[in-house]
Image 1: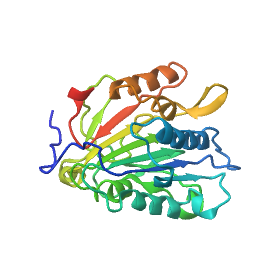
Image 2 (image 1 turned 180 degrees about the vertical axis):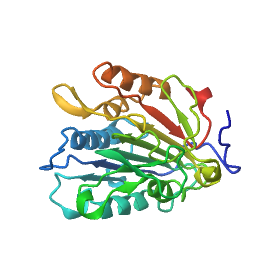
Image 3 (image 1 turned 120 degrees about the vertical axis):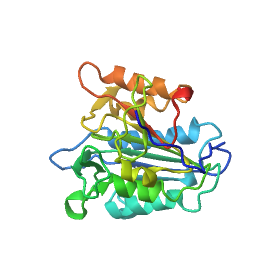
Image 4 (image 1 turned 90 degrees about the horizontal axis):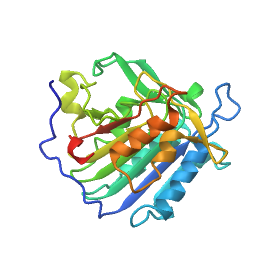
Length: 265
């Protein structure tokens, strides 16, 4: 099987530099397809990063966008989300550690530039998507991955439907640790490589839906809940999400990467 190759300047991150994070939770309050656990996910992830993560993220270095916040600048609108993503990667340096978390609706739309093997782009939905539109995976890659220098770590977590390849990374793994066939077309592979150390956890495959679940009587996303345990391997996270949702829901979590990582599972 023909797989994408490492970027020639790729470098693993030591994660010893600055730490920044962006946490987004969208419940779409009052909308026909309102969700229940996404705001909880984003706030819990922020608390986790501050209190549990190795060497702790500082609260002033974490941006939180949720649609229960009365401050217009802290609402997960399309404009605020894109500006916050740009803030996250701004001035990124080798061995910095960046974290992106999104919990909300996800979907698919027709691929217009021919880079997707299945002909579909993956998207995420801001709270104002009906007026301003969604955010497509091509733009997520351009904004958050392409600017990163060699040796910078970006860990992204998408707790949303159709999110398997939503960051458009070239290497995609399933819970069995197996490297799946490339979802990116041959001519687009060079554009999807990165010298940065990028990891992306997704709640399900591109063609699947994810769902809210409950822990302690509180609505949460399975991927967001499981990922808050710091003492586990990549494979353990994927398997735990699968176990939480099976057999009630058909949800197979995925791992994306800018580099081949099967040996690190």
